[in-house]
Length: 548
Image (cartoon, rainbow, N blue to C red; front, side, top):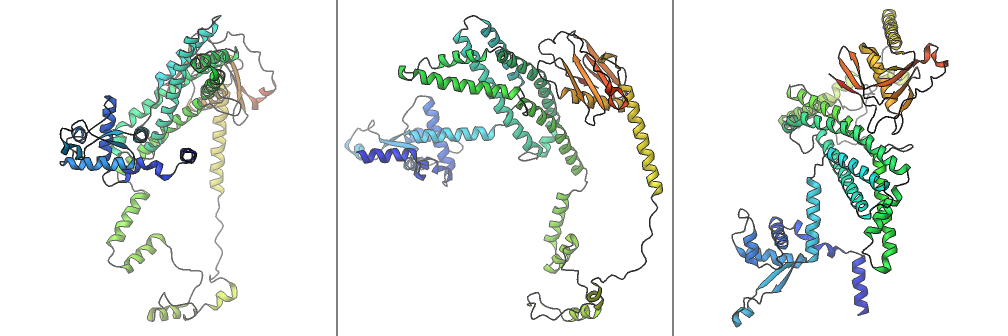
């Protein structure tokens, strides 16, 4: 008895190939029928039907793929019993005579191993077919639940039930958002690579896909910053730990008395890990970017990649040649070549991979080899020697030296390059002078900008917004070359700013802006004192949009 128990325990802890026998029907010749039979048992289980007879299984199969002979279903059932997916029990319910008792009749039901195998296959099919989605609605739900937690935490005695429900909904929506975002970005990369997708279908829906990405990016920028602010407010006031303790205590309330303490500790660790994952997903840390920021960057980078794929496909459809088309054409030429000699000539012409050409032979040797060719199978020791030019042996080079090439006069090209550099330097200087504000001014008073000044302004604004963190009102940043400095201060009066350019209008929330040219002697001036401005309202972020 003891040996049997120990052997059973060892089988549980160290799986053997026999433990996976319920998956054997996936590689059997009649796999389609086996899968239909197992799906029939799963459907019957949902109707609380435990046992099925062969005729019941035969009737449950699809009419288009159902075997004409019911005996084929019986044989499939017996094989599934052999693999451990089903269990067969004698069917005594319809015995009316002694002959019926001795006749082979069975009823079948799912085993635990068969049910587990079907559950695994269902998960596999679901994950394989999932395309994922970018759930902007989930972002709204996360904001709602975080606000609810702030309200609950403000109470003198928070309600454990409300706390548990709010945290459960919050983690469920966050987990769904993260999983679907990963699945969507994976499917998006396969779309960009044109894997498992029809070209015509891709061209038909690429505009909707780009609009979908842009809409989610906009929601992620606004709502992601709001979520980060709410998370920071909860953590700064030390309200998270009590809420997680309440949720853990409620989750462990039904545990056995002897396991109550341990169950609550395990539940608290689980809730703390969930909250940590949520915070790291939306809030950047020192030396670490948040997953929301990485997702936003990946989605932004996917838009030009999609446009590049569209451009490449349009070039192919317009008849322009590319490398893949060249190789396909070359493959057809090889297939149509009359003999191997023609294929070898085509190879040498196409790829230029010849034999060693660093040794040069004279005309007499070439004529002799043409008249009496040497087979390729001849060993080197038995082959006739090559006659090498004495000049090559003496000098190491066969080239006949002649007059050196004349030195080209590049004075005119250098002059044109100098003029171009001077003109670009002057244009850049005028653009820098145009952007210098001479002190804090409203962004709405910046006026109209020419294209060069507007590009320089966008680079400065991008450098400033890259350092923006939740809770800050004033930021300062220096351009990448260290020549200009920008100070940006958020306002809470709801005003809008418009910067007009020849290509359109750049609009967004109004800010105080101070741009200094550090190369013009302004770098030594004292930084102006921050203007006392109230903190921005909840949800305010320095996001600007371009209206064209």
